[in-house]
Image 1: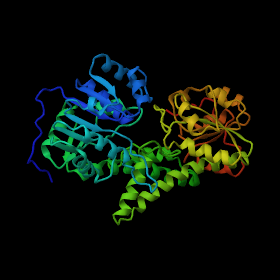
Image 2 (image 1 turned 45 degrees about the horizontal axis):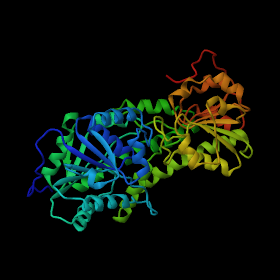
Image 3 (image 1 turned 60 degrees about the vertical axis):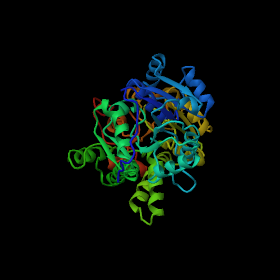
Image 4 (image 1 turned 180 degrees about the horizontal axis):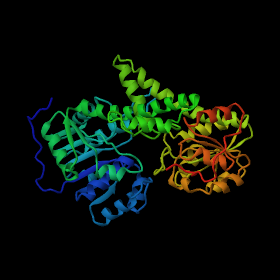
Length: 471
């Protein structure tokens, strides 16, 4: 329930002074977008190296369009970076907490960075302001922040806590920030919610105001639903392979139903990234600690992990074993448009291949510097053709646009064995087989795939004019 016993006395000017704690994907995008809307924004990070890089015009992450957005607002004097809470919070109307909440040892959300930010805010709280939780956090975190600030503040300045979960997609984060499907706000004080809502009204998006735990739960429930759709279609893909159905057409037929819709029904190697794996696991942990039985969420997680195993199983069957085989991974980032390697399927696939004695190489347009630190055992190639040279098999892991335009006859000529496992269903299997590839997708042309996995590598005749890539 909302209370209205106290109301923020914010400055009446349209332009607000905003402090954002954290300069990762969420914090940096949020800060830059609020600056783009004309606000005065200061971003704080305790990582001095990262702040120095931003102050020098560099970027700590890859996100399309972000470097240009940051530079434009820095030049305009609306966006700045600091390691000092005192400087960053000076005259701020709002402080957004946008720090990382990684998994802890038990699968829950590690809130240590949130707690540290709350304590630092409290130590520098010398005027009225609204603290906004932007990080993905379990229900109850807003109250935790309230208590921490009250415990560690030294003065008597008033403050309010609002939950404002983010719904940004890496690769399109700027668009999502400026064109949100909805803005979710939760607080125990209606006036504080309304004050934060005013920041978002120029975006003309629906604004839902509710209590703290409901707002926090909306984020987890949304990500869990999307992850469930991905695991569901991958379960259907496994059945399609056994009966000879095409999961792409199955998904298309399902998607025409308005009750279902077409999004997040792409079969493949499964989901990854900083959100879905962590949030599903955290919701499982939260449910279990509250005496609930999240069997569906556990199945979602298990199915997703099994998708990596299926890729390795296919390679093993097609090559008659993996020891001393040369396997190339097309793509490393968990999705196109980002260099994020957190929970990327490529990491698990590479680890399994290496464990069976394969030599693993990879190429990714932007993620290789991060991948080199995570999986130093793999070789990194200059491009897809370098990757194909001498390879026994290629696995499409990340469906970067540039992979749709490869010279596939050249790729085949460079490979030692023309095996291609399409982990994103990017290519036209029959056309690649016509070129001489031994092709396996996910949940499509199951009868052909089944014969291939039984060692019968002959495929039906196809016309040479068949398109190589899906439309």
